[in-house]
Length: 280
Image (cartoon, rainbow, N blue to C red; front, side, top):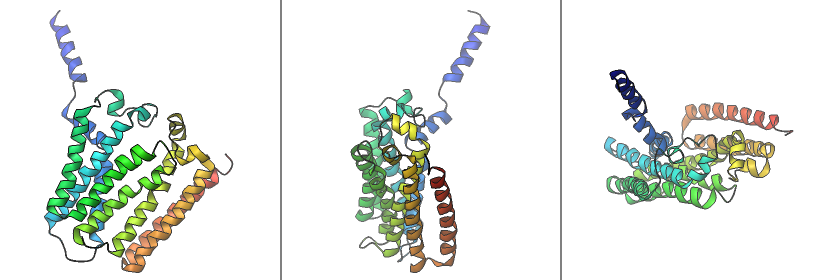
């Protein structure tokens, strides 16, 4: 073998050898950190709207650092539990446990459980037990209630599964007020709960063929795209109505203007989608 062949072999190995960037991207996607970071921000928002004493900055950081890995662990568990479904869907067939880049097994399951437990434990130690309970309930709802119990069985899967995000709001609120749930963060928890169905049903309409092939009973698969689009619009109406309630409880004019503007746009786009599918 000549020097040119050796050089070509080295270049080929360099192309297939995992890089630090690709490994980080792999973990970012595995733990669904894009969603996890949003959930962490949601917990901070729950803290921000809770009246009471101000918390030191490190408590706020600890809250985000607790809720985010708990959510991330639930997301990674979802990918292990649904790898058979993911293999049959265009949107998810390149996930790591489907392609074989990672191998599902006890080691990964232990790592995922440890990540979630670390988040819940941090919430208990740095904040309080109530925050830890809500942090756990958010991860448990997504990983077990939604992924294991409901997703393959009923179109109610995403409705009840929407509680996972609401628990993040309550975790943030409990960081400032562990003894009781204040009305304002509770309203925002309801808003987030009502946001989930129209959001995911719209996604399920867009990927109807994928969910149908995987035999996942998302609402459009069960009742058809036209009726599901009308359900999305009805859900949007409920969501917009609920989003206006906090304005009556002290959120101010800027919040009201934002809620009205975003709400009108959401209703307009939802009505458009329903009208396009009126005659399937």
